[in-house]
Length: 177
Image (cartoon, rainbow, N blue to C red; front, side, top):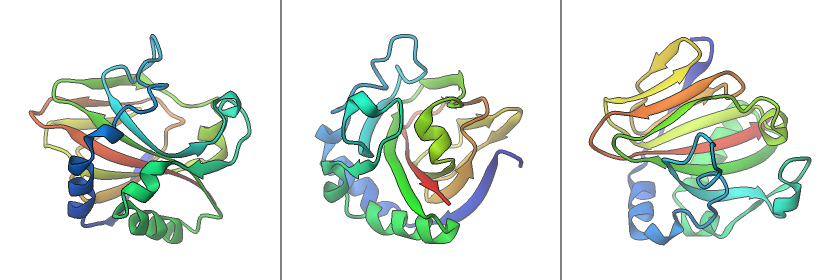
């Protein structure tokens, strides 16, 4: 397991309920999902934390909390615990991603992107999933159950395929140690 490592388990019931109660949070920022020829066109996002000025996203920037941070209070203790577990000195971006049944994120790498390299510690917290949702990192495959948090390397080629009949929801928490 060179590219993905189990970190912790969380009760994500309240977070899932908060997401269900606020469907309007999805796709408020379509930058990733509407990027033509980008890998995320089949997905939906909630941006919880990232740079304040889109003009600076490609280069150095200080991430800030977006309104979703306050609207998803069940996420906050999970993030605090992740930061403590990995000994993070800085919290970077936080994104929630939804992959509907039959959709996928094709193979890609985030190498070369300023944020991905400046905040290289990535935790993937699975909120909902199914046994047919496969995460791939290079030549490794993982079925990640709901409630588990995993560290993963997004600087290598990775992809996700949801062959199941339910959405796959996950929080991606970026940190710097």
